[in-house]
Image (cartoon, rainbow, N blue to C red; front, side, top):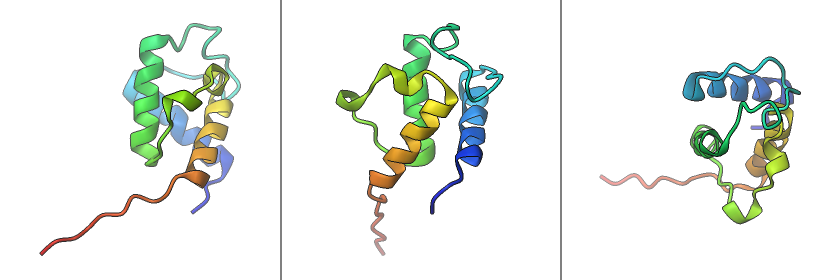
Length: 93
């Protein structure tokens, strides 16, 4: 199910606040230039995005600009959601 960009951006802002304890003022805020994201929080955010949205973001495909703002992160997540196969679970009795 596709998500609206604004709704997805809101979920990402909420995740950043809950998991990283960082307040983001707007989807366009420069998270890297302002120092909000550093190398440690970037790794934590990457893990959170993969877990929350059930996506995979291969390290070799990472571009720092994908984490410049919540808007950029939203585009990254939407792109990965469109290309990531749903996780299948096997039920055993």
